[in-house]
Length: 449
Image (tube, rainbow, N blue to C red):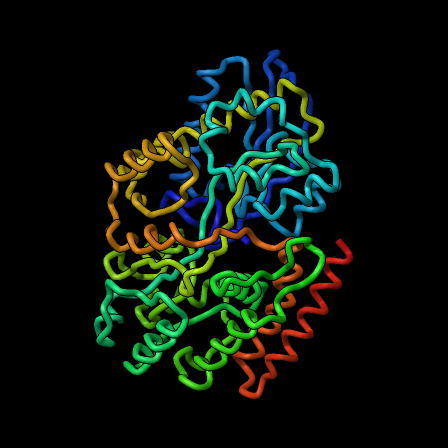
């Protein structure tokens, strides 16, 4: 799943959806009326996100000035990809020449034969070799390259330092294990006055998403390596549900209101009534700008458990109808917009700071080697948030195994939602039966492909 939205750097993160612009979508030939190579692209911020929109448009103009033979036509959308319409656009041949995808979409787009093979072209993308290999691999199917990553995130633990202090906990020592998290949550909940120690999602597929992250943290997997069988009915899967059940009913540290989704939990954290929840770093500016939180109070730790964490993100793929000229133009555009360290729409940290956008969050971390060093240097020079609050996250992630979401993720998350919501709403929920049922349903999903 996406973490929060179409941006992970600037401040104008929108809470409400804006309808996708479907008109003029799709590949329409590489020659514009003026003889230039024309490409359509999506994920332009909507007009309601004025600052982001102005930056995006300015960056396209700068690109066209530097590349006078290319004409870029942008389509706005929020979210950048609507799961309700994505498959229909694919099937109808309505995708832009260069189109946005979640990591979990890559194989599906290739399987339905809607992506261009860009293997022979990426050699001309100067930044490609600097991108993290595990992110590049996501868009590589059967040895062929079909897309380019744009951002990546990993799950961690957001916590309220002020509540830690009030509960007698060390705000600079977040819980490293699930047992420690449970103990800390209990102390925070004991503060009373509606304070909740730990909250989790359990509806709209988000419960299944977090179950997956928690399972990874225990060292487990949702699906076996062959991609054919579920692996949730395991000691690791049981540990996830048992821990949630114990905190909910044994400790009463998760509060009585359940079936929560991301906005509910963000509201709780922003109002100062929640101690901890799982999230990626991009939640932090939303908590401050939209939910009333304070940067100084919000810190980030790695996933408890010490074994793994869920990674996600997005990138761009190319329409199978694209000409070689359009593919080359699209790669140049991606390089300019998103893949130049310390510059472009996502990396111009000086511009972001000037516009009161948060600079200094620990992710996205797209590059490696010298490219990463340059990106981090520019980010550090323009930081306007308390970067020391995120050091534990950066340090802890070094030892965690990074795992992508399972195949058929949304269908699987829907199944796992039922298991998570059951243990949080029914005191007598049978964990063994829940996992057995979930395993059978996931096997059926995988069998259908």
